[in-house]
Length: 228
Length: 412
Ligand SMILES: Nc1ncnc2c1ncn2[C@@H]1O[C@H](COP(=O)(O)OP(=O)(O)O)[C@@H](O)[C@H]1O
Ligand SMILES: [Mg+2]
Image (tube, rainbow over all chains, first blue to last red):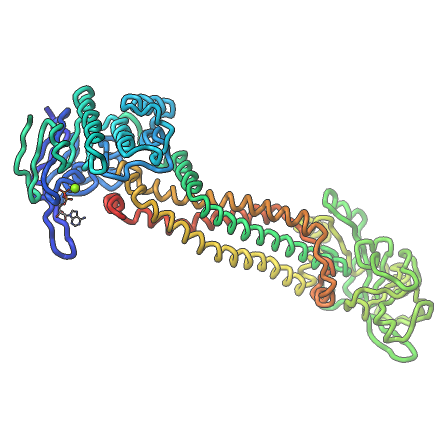
């Protein structure tokens, strides 16, 4: 089957205070539709860098990156922006939501950017919030929600557009283990029941244990890749 | 892709802008207040200056000039009977449909007063007292009486002239003037009244008599000037064109051309409005830019997230610009409200300048200044304020997208 993500020989070097830091070196990495992949590895191993490159937020210095078969290299800033809008769902470690918008509005605005009609927007936002058990909290602002609830709203926003892939960088970083487990059950359900392709980056063993494929990074290179 | 990306999701941007303004209510109120005060002060200043300009124009127009004056070519450089003209029947039709307050035709010639004490030059004007409702002759105060009509055979003179000639109401004056044939004529006139024209140059030099009387003396039917006064000075260009089309052999002057000094002062007063506007806006801009930069800095990560998930940089820039425009629009509305409260209550009776009356009179003002609100000023100042707000927001807006989305997300 065709890959959602296809990285070939990807390298990324940061010039940190003049000293070049090789965050990724020659990474080959493919993800097929419907996979639930966890990028694992110690801090500084390049997980975030790889996720950012896959998510079209950062560019590889060397190598090729294809998303749904589209080569990212030649795309302009606004083309990349559109690509992120339509094909990728992001769940960030923190600061995911807009504080002045309600949960519903936080889910709706991304569809507003896409040009979805108001009625369809409202329906889809309502559906996804209900599915994630947030129906009662739709009108609350992020400040009135717990960390776990906020992260669920962020997932609602990320999947409401039916992206090709959901990218989550350290999604459990600010959550306790009970809440993390709820979140992981949710991700597993989305993956198994709705076929959402998920790639997470984490150093949390709990998160890794939920993924069906674990990719181990070390010093910017993939050292281990196993499916369970 | 199922749907088309919206480049500028305006309703979303407007919502974000307004919500952020509400979230920082204190800051927003402060900003609104300063915009409102600045706009109100410019509006009040503008209406005071408009009032002053009206006074200035009235004062000039009333001094025989009129809004428009028709003269024979050459009269301006050499005012005398050699440059005369006659009114053709039906010329008034040119002014049909225009807001004309009145018109008066006059014959104005240099003359010499001969008294026991001295012989001196002055200007003798033959007028139709009934047509002179358009000039100061109708409103001046008199000792004795004013002229009654076009056939009046008496003269009126100014207080200053009466003083220097040591003459008064009821006494006689001998005047000498040249007719069109070049011959000098001399006649005696009884002084009907002495007028007080508030220290203008007129008082010293102008003697008035009935126009028919002067025609008889000089043996002519011609006039040297036709003054037209309008009810609405805004129609001046139209009236000017209308007169010019009838009096093709003559010259038509506006009051600005006849009184260039007053006209210059009038124009400088316009400039005054702009200078005050510029000062107020300059003061405002610093606060505005400062506040917007702070607002952008506080939201670096939020804006980074928006761009990371696919909001275009242009939309993020627009959000900041819209925020500024919203504040400016609200501030302008408040400012207009404040200004109209001030003008309708505090300044409704105008300002009494009698303390400075002497100085004021010198520059053509009355001792009472009545503000005059002009819709065009209000609209112009309001629109320009919003434009200033938008321009001022460009730098902070630029700051909002200076970093890449990743850098912005990572910022602390
Ligand atoms: N913006 C950056 N500037 C300089 N160095 C960076 C930057 N981002 C990441 N790095 C470096 O790249 C390496 C990989 O980082 P990262 O991808 O964040 O690792 P991980 O997410 O696995 O902890 C680290 O050595 C890190 O210091
Ligand atoms: Mg990381």
